[in-house]
Amino acid sequence: MDSIYHTITLRFLAEPSDVNFGGKVHGGSVMKWIDQAGYTCAANWSGQYAVTVYVGGIRFFKPIAIGDLVEIHASIIYTGNTSMHISIDVFAGNPRQQQKTKTTHCVMVFAAVDDNGKTVAVPKWVPRTANEITMEGYAKKLMDLRKDIDEEMKPYM
Image (cartoon, rainbow, N blue to C red; front, side, top):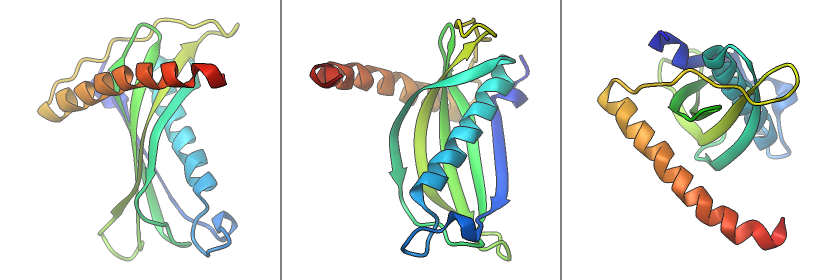
């Protein structure tokens, strides 16, 4: 599969309807945008409907102001048999300026499913650049960490 399909960028302006009580964009709005970008990347890569399996380590570094140009970059960083690990970075800034600041980061896992909701195989993603190899290693490290987290959470599930 052509490597162009392993990444997408969504761009739009943060609107007044996205505001929280503090006058900045609500974290829930950012999480919705992250989910939309992740889904788009996963569906584009797999050619299938995709469901969110995991969202991990979401970090909000900086608030987003109403009127900011928001850019959400989603990239495949690892594929399993039916799953896709996607790194998502959110950037924002004044649309009259070129400079955008990273505001949020997380990794999501999606599974490709058929019309009956059964998981289906996805194309294998193969990292080609040094950065892609680094990001694949990051995904694998997070998979190992999730095993420990899952074990800790068992009594509460």
